[in-house]
Amino acid sequence: AQQNHEGAVMRTDSNAASTAGMRTRLSRSASKALLQSHVIAAVQGFVKAISLGTKRWSASVQQDMLNFLTCLFKYRDLPEVAATINASIGSVTLEAWLGVLPQLLARIQIRSPSVRSVLHPLLTRLGAKHPQALMYP
Figure 1 (tube, rainbow, N blue to C red):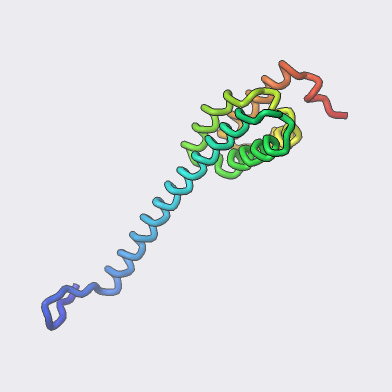
Figure 2 (cartoon, rainbow, N blue to C red):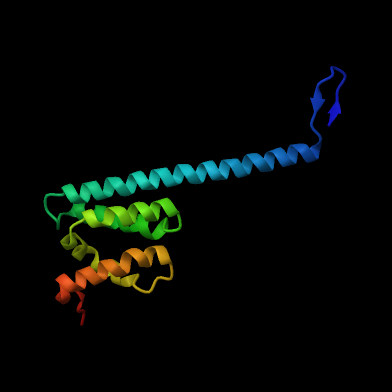
């Protein structure tokens, strides 16, 4: 650091670059935390809307189910999001999943352990209660 004629300490270029890098890292972690909190709130809202839906085959319930799946597939690597999805998936009736069964089956071989931990038990429960639903010609 260098002092100017008024005695104030001036940053050198390396200190300024290091400070900018630190701000970027802090900004990224704050951004990730903010994204995670928004996704968790969205997942909780979708689950609430699905469970309060009066008709399980209504367009709004189906749209909420698809949005819920989007959160699962897109933000699966955020640990708290995966935990929230795992905790809340049981409150969605099994019959509600029948409307999005093709989307579930399309992702059956996904490599992500967090998605598989949700998907495989769900498909097993669906198959036990509605085996005819899993049969496609």
